[in-house]
Image (cartoon, rainbow, N blue to C red; front, side, top):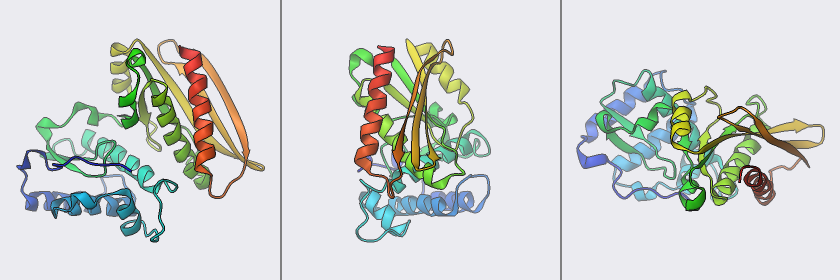
Length: 273
């Protein structure tokens, strides 16, 4: 379960009324590309934070209060909150890069937390300009391999809603497994597929090696195909690819997805090290 910072309102300098008014304007407009339920998600975490209840912002509370899950909701087996939080982070990044560039402050939902921070635009991190975020698990990478960067890209066809749900779980599992093998892991979340060119250029300048790992799940006759392809972002060379077919599961078993993800991470590590 993700945890958040103890002081979510940066520098405590922003008046609550100003934040509430800005939130109403942001959620009422069309510039922020979010579904209605993810607007409710964002409004929920902002309102809870402003009301002094940041400690209540956990995956379970969001799943029950925002997404209508029942009292037996288990965030460890149902990843809906993690998936939708990633989409919100992407939408906010795109908004502040474009129509919200002149906003006086920004709502920041950092990887690894569901508690929003309200940051002065002057102090906003430059990384918000691109919809590519460093996976929180990557901070545990072994220091000897920390300069090898892996950009994980989700390529499942978003028109296949069942495959998309499984694909999001698979991507999350691959990210965790890759971090465990010592990679510095970045994620380009679905459905934002535009190439974050500046962010990748920065990686190429500051990392010895940068690889792209395309991950997808596709429906086949009797189940799902879990596929991946690894390429060197400096040379464009394809360094490896493979797939595994699995009889359909409803819902997908998290342990099996984790096993597949670990196998992918191990194969990638063997290729690049």
